[in-house]
Every structure is written in C-alpha cells, then in structure tokens.
Length: 440
Image (cartoon, rainbow, N blue to C red; front, side, top):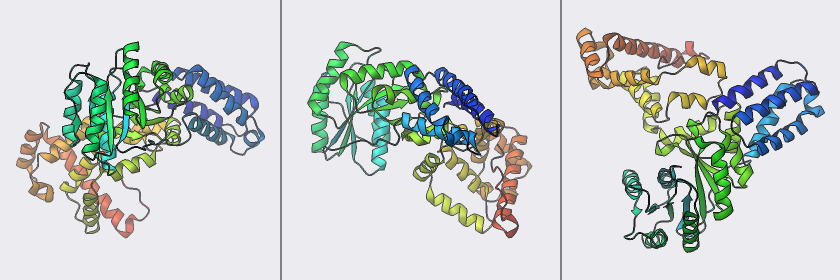
C-alpha cells in the first residue's frame, strides 16, 4: 500500500534532511518532486495543487528556513497537510435510529457484499446485535454470497421472498426491529457502470428506510476513476461516508488522498485484505504517517488486542519466566502472528526505514514450511524437542512435505530462540534486543 508514493517522498525528504540549511530554492525543488510523486500516485490534480500551495505557504516561512532541522520541519508540515486533506480525524458512524440502518452503495465488483459482512462483524465484536439485508436481486449469487458470509460469522441475513429491492429493504428493517437487532446493513445492487435505473432504485430505498448512514463502497485499485464515480454518486444519492476496499493492493493510493477533498465526504473504513478483520476504521493521521514511512503502530496494537489470544500470551510469559519455552509455544506464537496477516503487512505498520524493510524481504513460503513442520510433530515432540532423533525427523519431513534439512533448520531456530529468551529473562539479558525468533 502506497509503496511507490512512500519511496518517492522518502527520497525527497532524505535529500532535504541532508542539507544543514534550506533555501527557498531548495524548498521549491522539493515541492516540485512531491507534486510529481502525488500526480504519479493518481491523486486528483486539483487536490495536488491545493495541497502543494498549503505546504508551500508554511514551508517558506522563518519557522522552517531558520530552523536547525529544516528537513524534519518539512516532513512535519507534509504530514499535517496530508492528515488535514484526508479529514483530520476518524469519522465514525452516526447511528440514531433503533435499529440503526446502514445502506451500502457502489458499482458492481467494488466489494459491497463482503464489506457489509465485515462491517456487521466489526459491530458484533463491539457488543452490538447486527443483521444483514440482501437487497441485491440482480447479480447472480449475490444473495447466496451474503447468506454464506452471514452463516460463517453467525450473523442473520434477511432475504425476503420477492424481487423488489425496495420492498426487501423495508421488510428487512421491520424484521430486524421485531427480532431486536440494533443495527442492520443493507447490501444494495450495483451495476457495471452508473445508470439512471440504479440511481432511482437507490433513491427509493433511501426514502423508504431512512438510513442513518449511506456508505459509498469503492475499489481503491481503480484509482482516479473511483473518485470520479464517488463524485457522481454523491451528487445523486448524497452518501455520508466512503469505504475504500483493496487498499492493500494499491501501491499508489491516489483514491484515499482524493475522495474526501473532491466529495466533501469522509472515508470511514478501509479494506486491507480478504479476511473479515481486515476492514478497519480509517484514521487520517495514521494513514498520513504510513504514507511517509513512519509506520502505524497504533493500528497494529489494536489488531493485536482484538485478534490475539490473551491466554496464550499469558501462558508464554509464564513459560519464559520458568525457562520452559517449548516447540508448542513456538507453534502457538507463529499461529498467533499469522492472525495479524502477512509479515509484509506487519512490517508496513512498523516505523522501519525503506531500505531496512527491503533488506528484511519476508518469505511467506518459509513461514508456511515452518508451520507445516511444527504441525507434523506429535504433541510429545513439541513439548520435549530432545526426543526428536533421525527417524522422527524423517517422519516429520514426510508428513510436512519437506526435507530433513528443513526440519533441522526449524529445530536450529528454536534452539536460538531458547537461548535468546534465556538471555532476556536473566540478568545478562538486560538491555539486549530480542533476536528474530522465526529466523526470517
């Protein structure tokens, strides 16, 4: 996400930081490169012009040019202006009615159906009682897809018994009220392109159910086109916020930087993967820092708190204190880490400089092999690694589809981890940084 833009901006900032003092000409040259980087990232040209004007207005003042760290001051100004451009702070849902009604709109293929399910799950984790309404009667298997998602998340789905989306939406809200659901998400129909019939149908649903929120769902990978579509939808439907999907697959990120400025509506959620937990509230300040290569540690912490097993973490601490770190603990921690998504995604949220991040070059296949080897061991072997001899290694290798040398590598990493944990838990380990437990 934003890889191309981040690399180019960091290149500009690196040159500016390398100068002890900046002149107005240095700032102008830097701003020219920032402008080009933003345009190449598919940010709307009007947005780029206004953003650069704001940055220039602040960057050529005495505060920067006379500063002892002018390069850092420029970075701070760019971060502040990017944050303001994307809305300043997180804009939550404004839910008034009971049940609260959230209507999802957008073109076909933008991710409305999966986003509806992800939003329902997000609110279920917050203690709400959500329900889903399948009002897309045109796309083949749309209703079945929502039902499958609802069943997997244990969230009820109202489908109705007719073909009129307006009637289904209206009856669905009444059904939710009767069954004491406090929030419903309506999955409306899309088209391959904007047409008058679709818009009128959405307007009728809006009039009938009076939604608390109308969320426009856009595929971030369509870039500037997503912004143009958002502008058209807002003119006709007046949505209250946007959901950007597939943001993890867009190395440019222009849509995220343009939507709010062009439509005047905030981005409220972003989709960063296929998993249900990969839909997250949008925080402009955090996103600005990620764009500038500063990481997003707060989001990573929130993910860890919501997805990781606290009991396993507590058990690991006890084992470390007693110097009883086993292969089972090793397996548990890798599986827990996997809940946070690909290693590259975790690194993306850490404040690691671009060059260092590139040198780490995480190999997901290596992690898959490690998991396969650990899972091919018996519980007795994972609790007592010393019993794993030659014949057991051969059996483990066959069971995991790997070679004996791969099993040896995993066992070697495990021993290194034991040594590192022993050092960290003892007096000699004070102040020592933990080594890479996975050997990645």
